[in-house]
Image 1 (tube, one colour):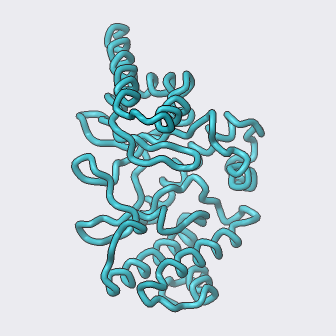
Image 2 (cartoon, helix red, strand yellow):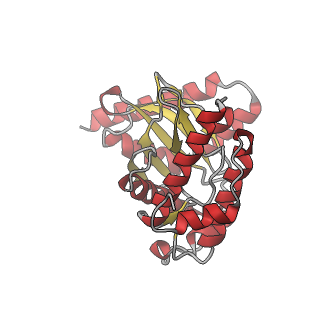
Length: 265
């Protein structure tokens, strides 16, 4: 067992080394160094020992607080590994979403604990959304600052963002309706508001042209003191983007629709 674990750890080290070698520019090298600190490597070793992460692949995306990598999971299945950066995450902005959430009322106000809580928060939010029938990446497990989840893509290629997808007017209108229904389900059935919903946090499955909501770390329960403010902001972001598809509803009408008993009221 010990030799097997040592072999897995060595492979993970080699994978990280390969990531560094493949990315030549200094800015990207700096990001890689920030992501794979000792605490993160220890968490990866734990996940490797559990057989959840077999090998790391290339980068899928780089955000303000996290990097997402493609990886091989059990039976060489593609999975997504989201790593919240302990060294460079803007954890002060995370506090606005964490500290008003009754699920995390006992979290200490230091950077490491906030980031670990944020990772668990995204896992739990995805679980709630999935249970409500919303298409989101299925969460698998968390370990410290790492979230393992379903990879949304085909043959190692992630699905495109809504921002990157060219749609026909009718397709855009249909996707808008689906997203509003999803926000309603999130609100009524999952007791959540996304909190940062925009064209940058929605993927489009090219096979059936349907939306997939992602990046739910900032999602808050309805008990959060700013939940209503976040909901209104999500609505305004969507209406701004979908104007190009001749969606001209008012923010207030969408707001009332989401808060109603039935999504089509």
